[in-house]
Image (cartoon, rainbow, N blue to C red; front, side, top):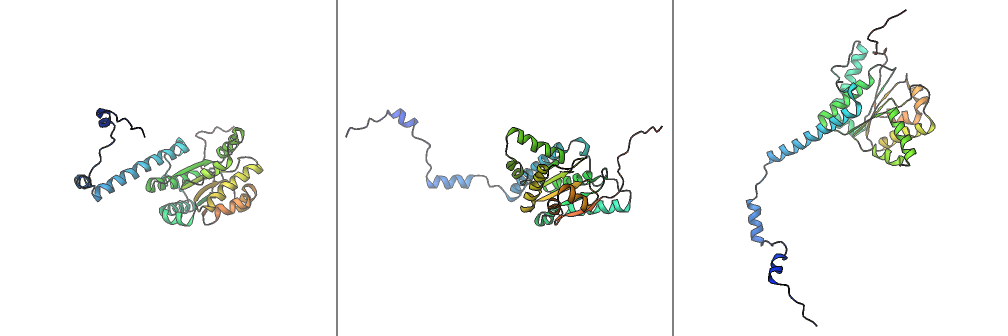
Amino acid sequence: MEDRQQPPASVQASDSGPKRLTFEQTLSRIAAAPVQSEAEFARREQLAADRQREARLMDLLRQVGDRYAGCRLANWRAATPKQREVREAVREWASRWPERAANGEGLVLYGPVGTGKDHLAFAAVRHLVERHGLSVRWLNGRAFVGEVRDRIEEGRSERSLISGLTVPDIVVISDPLPPVGELTIHQADMMYRLVHSRYEARRVTVCTLNVAGDDEADRRLGTATWDRLCDQAWKIACMWETSRKPAREVKP
């Protein structure tokens, strides 16, 4: 067999790979390495959690826009005993997140338009993000319908949309019904698939709905969808007049 020619010594020296340490050298390096104290480790963990919390809060604010940026439970106007009762119920729902998450306890706020349901929903969810660093997806009902339509036109999967919306800790569905008329069969089916996917996964869903009660919700949203939204949820009626008023009104 022909002998292999050895490369020059200079090549061998430069191509010999990383220098291996002996067992004793490895132990020596480990012993000399700085040891992170428990306090330092906890500080780093807290810093990472704070950064994640801040990023998720900024993401939530970006999703909802300027109108809700300053909304808090403290500045939600409660002028009547019923409104104060509703505000305190929402505050209580938001105060014990581990329990809500474990039981899949959502929040459903329903009633006429202009009663401050979205303000309450946002304030509660914002509190949870600030306190627990939760991931939240805020869905306007009409925007969700538009996203579904865009996916159809672009040939993208509806399944991936629904599976992606199962992931966040909380999904808020802000008024899934059209202001006039009814959902189409396909729109109602997509809303059911969204709610059902989170229901099966025991994920918390928050919904605000402009309906007078169960009968209207069953008819317009679908009995199966409404049933799943309300199961184990805190279902709160906001039954008072709209708070939206003109800045100035000139009557004839």
